[in-house]
Length: 226
Image (cartoon, rainbow, N blue to C red; front, top):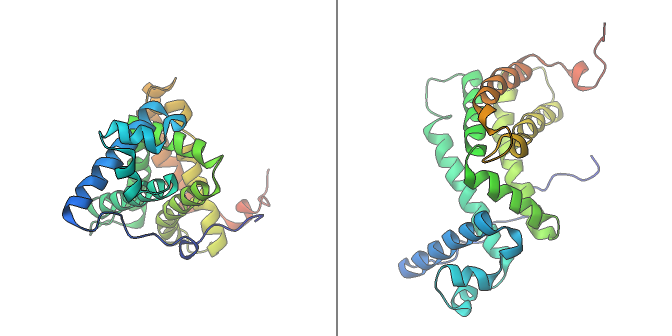
C-alpha cells in the first residue's frame, strides 16, 4: 500500500493497546474518543494531554497513566483506524465472488466516501500537521499509508501482471495520492465538496483503467508521444 525507503511495518512494531482489562479498556476508549474530538474539532495545536484530559473529564495523571506520551496516543489512534479499515475491507472489498477490477473500484469508492466525511477530512489534515513537527508521528502516518498502498497493490498486481513489483508500487502510490489529493478541494466543507460524487465516479473509472492498462514504458516516461 528513492531518496528515502518507505518505512517497513517491522521497523515500527505496534505496541500492545493500553487497557488490557475491562475497566482499563473502557478508560482507554474514552480517552481515544476525546482525543479524536479534540484533533478533529480543535486541531493539532490543541492536541495536548491536558486538553484531552479535560475533554474526557479525567485528571491529567489518569490520562498519562495510559498514555505517558502524546506519541503513544497517536500510535494507538492510527492502529485503531487501520483495524477499523481492515474490518470494512473484509465486509466489502474482500467478500467472495468479486474480481480484482471490482475490488479495486470498491477501494476507490470507499476511500473517497471516507474523505468526504468530516472525521477523515479533518483528522488526516491535522495528523499531517503533527507529522511536520514530529518524526515519530511522521513514521506512523507513513506506515498507515504504506498499508493503504499494500491494499491497492495486491489488486494492481492481479489486473496488470506485466508490471514489476516496483512499478506496481508506483501505480499504487499514484492511486492513493490521487484520492488523498481530493481532500483540500472536495473534502468536508471544502470549496468543491458538492462535486465529490462526480469526482468519485470519474476516479473509480479512470484509476481502475490506469491500473489495468498502464505499461512499463509509460511508467518510465518512455511511451511514444505521437
